[in-house]
Image (cartoon, rainbow, N blue to C red; front, side, top):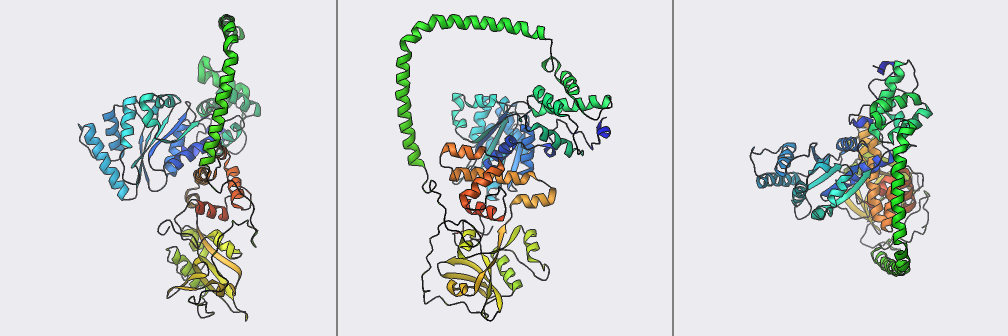
Length: 578
């Protein structure tokens, strides 16, 4: 059709839910972040709602492609089922063998056994139900009962409901209040804004293989007015407009093409209508409504005068009581240490480091031996082998002469900096120090843990404790650390998935907002920020360079704040090797 004419490899405005064509508007990023954040929780429900055509299904497909590796997802597309039929469909999706005439109890027992087996294997099961507004109240109650399946530590099943806005009304029914209380994350997906529409069109055209502008600015404005920013309508009208331009031999889509396309797509619901035919019934209707309202106002005016002042007084008294009560609650629940954010001293790298309580004494304890140089110093390959060993990775300098290239293959980043002891404790990672004596001889040491003046170093013969003061006399600030690369870097290298970074950051920024927001309103404000503004907020909070870029130092501090399971230099480990 028009693909060759415009230079497309494929149709740019197909309404199929292809994740490659998902333009991540700020709203879609938030929806994906809620999904990614929710599945890391302890079970329960996640609810994503949105008007018809806003991209809920496409968002769900993108989530499925980017879900954590330990998550298994079962997807139900047709929820117009009875409770028993839905349980049977869940068994089919989870590949649970079950007899054709199994009862509800039998199906629940089979699902429970499968969930326990998955939990023992370190897997997490997620059930996604699209078009969930079609679920009956009885079926929703059965789903709630499924979330009762749990161990002593966590619930075994996470359920994601995607549906139109009426799903929220259904969940608000009194008989479903128990289910509604188990919703751990919810988000309403709105249409894209007029400012985002040019980028949306450009993105889809680019994925289809075209670079350049096809839609005139006037056509884009017309397209937004006729589609109201609903992605599905945008796609339908744009596809038909391109076809219209092609039939006329035009390489630019004009407002006339958009207007005609909207008429063909929407019939009488879209496009211009005769002014007289539209206004007369509307005018008579409005006049009738106005007359009714005027009559009601006149008939109730006298009564309103009698009690309005009393109502105002009562409302003011209630408002004062509410403010006093709210102030008491916020004051009691506000976490300590989050209000004060005074700058601390800067280290040699220019980092604003938090105040650290160090237990090092002026004189090392007699039982801690000093570091012996050069006897205990390592060569650079030996030091890298020891540093990788702390991370549980076996490194062969002969096979991989460039250690930092090997680190990236192993999912680690390699960072070389100049700093002080406070820099090391701020990073909180095992570190390789470059040492040098007065004669100019140099060597390396791997510092695995640091507690006051007690430094645990890694030697080929095993770990050993030495005095850190004896190391400091030989160390002039140069160090190297390994840090855990975010999953999206490996994903980007493998498949070019640029959305992974925004998803990774979005999930963690929601957690950080919950941890560091000073009030519910402040937490909500932080979550509404753009991804770059969220990073700038966090960098300012942690005394990092505020540039809005999630570089190595920012990612390391995010992992520190969220207790990532990685080797630590001064902090207790949350678990085993990461």
